[in-house]
Image (cartoon, rainbow, N blue to C red; front, side, top):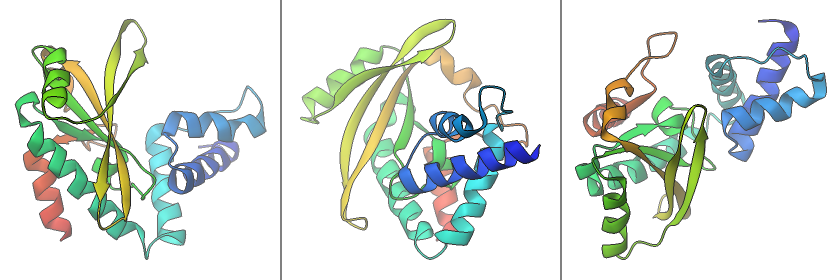
Length: 194
């Protein structure tokens, strides 16, 4: 990675860890200082920089924050087990801080069924969508879930995928680590870190 890309990665890592930004937005914001031709680091390089930032500046608070976020994820994965939930993002990868959102991928025969189940359970949520190049936008339901250890609500994004999308869900990153995990995988991860 070039020196410029290293600086962008470090700047993006600060934005991710301290402001809760997503990788793509943090990369673009950090790169603005270098102009349009700046070489952007990969998500794996950003993640490495986030881990370094956490080790240097947040080592005393981040592990407890991550554990609290994983408890929130576990609760929602158990509630939504019928839709084959998989945890992804910083909470799965271990780089989440209290500002991070929980990202759950739900794999549905009928994506509206998950929405109807939330309505029937009296759960308030917002709806949105996520653009995907060359594909239909992905419907996203967002709920606020209280976390006693954090003393505040956590944002939980429920991404409503078609059931067929589950086939490629467990593809690993360039280093062989999975981008997401199911309920059993999260329970193993939490047991290892307890």
